[in-house]
Length: 119
Image 1 (cartoon, rainbow, N blue to C red):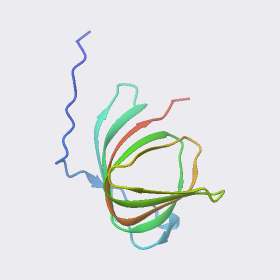
Image 2: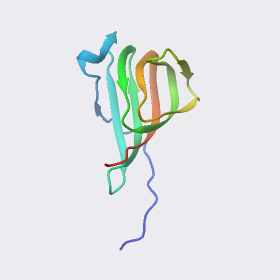
Image 3: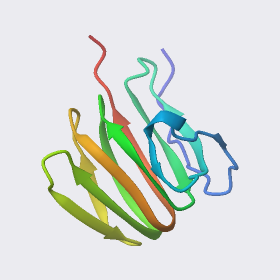
């Protein structure tokens, strides 16, 4: 077995388009990009960068996601009406099972780390 190596994440990767499904979009025409920069061997943990233009769409999380917003402003609201606004520099976790909306108020970028248990 080889020794585990440190993975250096690269902010400059361009990533790929990862737009919300049209049926989930509630406002705007959000254009998103994701650059997954690390995945463990079990495919349960991964991390990278994500960016989006303005828009609003429905979300339903099956994974736990840790986010650090590096640019812009977002508003997340649960189906029960719990509402949070985050700006560049804010860090937060969206837990598995969360349902609601994600709104990009100002074009944003974030670092993410996701854990999704395999069943």
